[in-house]
Amino acid sequence: MSTQYNAPPVGQCGNWYARQDFMPGSTPTLRVTGRCTFGTPGYTVVLKRAEPQGINPRILILDKVVTPPTGIVTQVVTTIDVSYEEETSTKYEQVQIRPDGPIIDVEITS
Image (cartoon, rainbow, N blue to C red; front, side):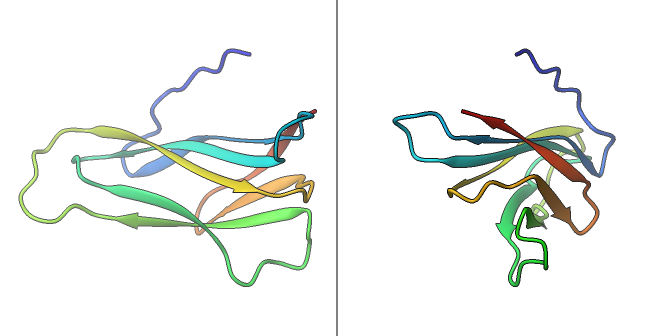
């Protein structure tokens, strides 16, 4: 499957994708990817499992933590890849990215 990755607008994240792999012979793993665009380089974005999780055990909630650059940086629009990976046998149906992200459906491969 080919996926087109366009850069989201400056200051935003997008192109979110979630897939959970249940292929025989491997550890079940959930992978979430996306892209974030900023007006300067040096930003970092981390997805962390929210604690506590919500009431629906089929929706994984991830918190998006954005850290701006320190010091002097050039003014160049920069897009970075963001990813999260978790070994889990829980079959998630959706992933919610907080605070402002979407709820995305999880593609299951087996």
